[in-house]
Each structure stands twice: as structure tokens, then as C-alpha cells.
Length: 331
View 1: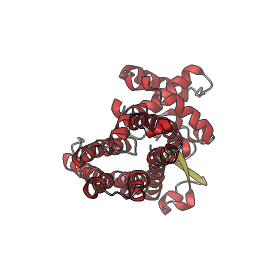
View 2 (view 1 turned 45 degrees about the horizontal axis):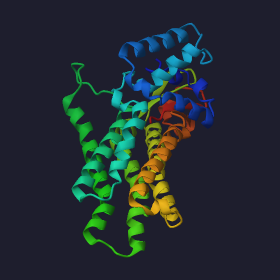
View 3 (view 1 turned 90 degrees about the horizontal axis):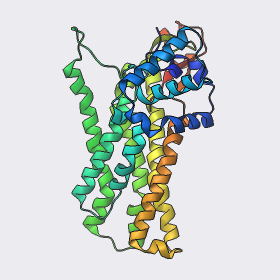
View 4 (view 1 turned 30 degrees about the horizontal axis):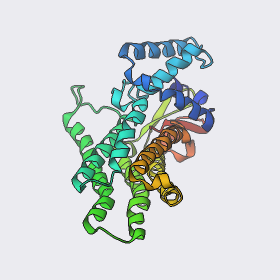
């Protein structure tokens, strides 16, 4: 049995040889916004091309047509379920959607309710993206249809994670509005220092919550030929932790670096002392850092990662002789 979905994840040994820089270059191409609007017919054609090439043993990314089909599949299909993802949750859409959400969630010149709502929109999208791009498998009942009760059980952790993250993200703004501190050091602490690490922490924790099912039930692990050899809870826990770490690095950097940099440059630049120009430059800086960090966080650790056989459950260890197995980490 092969893992459903993508060429790059059905041939693990070919994907695993890519370096971090090569993965970064691949993600630059995959994050092309035009992939968001690609029709289902084109995606299906790309998948059929990849499957036919694999059957005929002609699956080479050196061929330009094959490479485009591979990138379209990576940008549109969940490799575990094999289903085409909703356009808004495809990786190319992540860049387009997070730009306005990050900027609106960091605005300080509004009341607390507006801040909470913008934080809710931000965390709802980020957690929805993480869930859709994880090792999701639809739970079915005896009749073979999706189990509504189990679906609700899956959605409840998402609701809790989004609510908690939104409340935590609103705290710095609440403190500024409620107590109106006059000391520059206190304002600097709550405006520039706390939001970045706080957002990084809650993003990592909320992703662990919404994808906790992977650690509890396990995820599929494959051999070097793409054959599924079992389901591992340890691999699931490793996949969730790695993705949470990359998510924390992404949003922690995006919020921490621009604010901290502009704070120290503000005293030396007349342009930055003007509130209007400072706001525009801040937004532009956030966009640049975000556009850089998204492909970095996606390529930092491979989506198809390795795990040593002796780290897995005994039943999996006894089912294969390969020293390393592969699992899908998610995005």
C-alpha cells in the first residue's frame, strides 16, 4: 500500500536527498499565488500524470512537465488523505491570507474588542490551515459515512485552541488600554517585546492541541519505497512537535524582529518619528519578513521526515528491516 496523494511523498528516498536550500527554492515556486485558483480538473490531470510516470518508472523532476505537475500537487493535495484541499487552506493561499491577518492583529490603536476579534480571525485561520495540512484522516462509522459525533469531537479542540490563543494575544493590548502606562520601558515591554514570543508560544501550543489526534492515534510511516509499514504514535508526536516548532519560529520572528528593529531605529531617523510614515514602514517590514519566513519555515525541516526504526513501536520494528522510516510531518 502506498501513501495516497503526492509524488514526492510516494517516493521518500528521492525527496529526502533534497537539501534545506533546495527545499527552500522548491517552496518559492510552490507558493505561487496562481496555484490557489487552479481548477480541480488541472489538479486531477497533474496527479494522473505523476501516477502514470511512477508506474512506468519515468518519474523524474528533471522533466519540466513533471516538475510543474509535482509542484501543483504539493500546492493543492493533502498527501495523507489524497483529497484536494480547499483553496483557502492551500499553502500558496497561506501567504495571501496571513499578510492582512498579521497586520490587523498587531494594531494597537483600537479598543480591546476589535483586537480580540482580529486575533480570533488570525488564530482561526492559522489553526485551520495546520489541521487541513496535517495527517488528517476522515473518521467513518459502520455505514462508511463520516461520523458526525467524532467530527464535533475534532472541532471542539479547535474552538478551545482559537479562543485561548485569542485571549492570550489580546493581553498586551488590554494592559496598555486598561492601565495606560506612562513609563517608556513598560510601553516598550508590552508593545515590542512581549507580542512576538507570546504569539510564538500560543501558535505552537494551539497547533499541538488541534493536531493532538495524530499523537494519540498515530500516523502512517513508510519505507524507502513508499510502502506503509504501520501506524506510529511516536512518529505522530514527533510530527506535531516539529510543526509546532516551525510555526513558533515563523510568527515569533515576524512579530518580534520588525518591532524591535524599528524601535531602535526610530530615534535615529526623522522619517520614523512621523506616526503615519512609521506605520507604513512597519507594515512593509512585516510583509517582507513574513514573505521571507514562510518558505523558510516550510523548508526548515522536510515535510517528509526520517525517524529511526528503533525509536518506533515494537510491532513496526519487527515488520521491516530498514534502519530508517519516513513520515509526513505536515505544514
